[in-house]
Length: 126
Image (cartoon, rainbow, N blue to C red; front, side, top):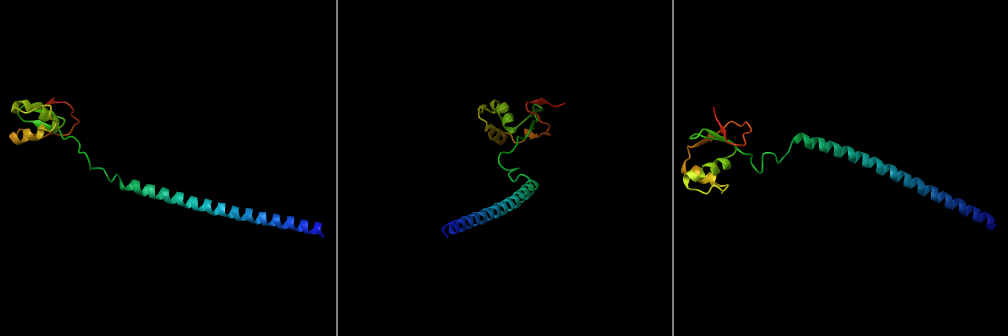
């Protein structure tokens, strides 16, 4: 009888293990499916985010604005460069990168916006 009980116990233990393995397999399959669904959602959100563009574009540091000096007819790649170039004519410090604002206060009609063509250094206008 004890041999029969031992055999039944082994069978029951095996059945329990098989049931646990099946449960684990179902759990793995469920998690795999959930993971695939989440991956699809993330991909969709990434596409939607890219379609919105860069929300920071246009904010933060502004790009250099080229200006033309009406007196010398030179185009400077930025207001700061123009201010530093003519600062000494007004008795100002040309090393000060903010000197543009002082120059423009002293002579507001001297400069005008220049066409943007990527000018980095002063250029003579024809």
